[in-house]
Amino acid sequence: MKKTILLSIILFTYFLHSNALAQENKNVIYYVGIGPAIDGNIGLYGINVSNELSFGLGKRISLNPSLTYYQSIKSFDNYDDPKFGQDNSSGLFTNVTLKYDVLKTTNDFRISLAFGPSFQIGSENSTDGASLRYDETGSYYEYMYSIERFAKLGYTQQIAFDWKSKNENRRNSAALSMSSFGGYWPWYLMATYRMGFKLK
Image (tube, rainbow, N blue to C red):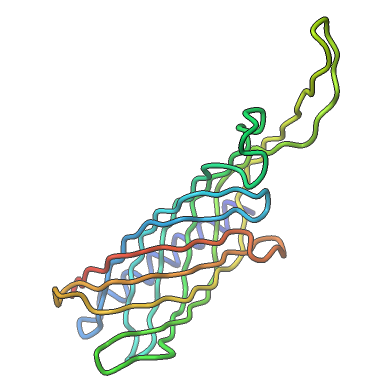
């Protein structure tokens, strides 16, 4: 089932790429960006690196397949205790969103909202609990950890701010995205600064 979902998303993304590239009169912008992230499920700070292709479908609407990598850095709690240093999460996200420019000014500053499916392949290591142990030196806590690997389908929402660069073939962008899985919203929260390059 998971393989079928993954294959369907890959084929759908490929079809969208091919179809949009065939439309010579539409704008195509490639965005690459980096920024902070939060795994709200187990409480971790992290970093994300994103790649996105934006295919203009009209004056205000675009289709945006993207690939994002997320890696945790540290935990919200107990950051001074090295025993908690094993908490970790990472993931690769494939998203396809439909974006609409809710505001577009005369100098081409845009505020956009986007929504679409999100597929994640990833893993997480988290602290499950601790038990009190004793030895000749005294008492200590022995921590228990769990490792989970997953491939899951959810959805993502995004608000993006986009403005012109001094170079007419480039754009600047800042985006805030929320990805949700298994009814948990938002599971991941990501803020990203992006550079956009007009491909045609």
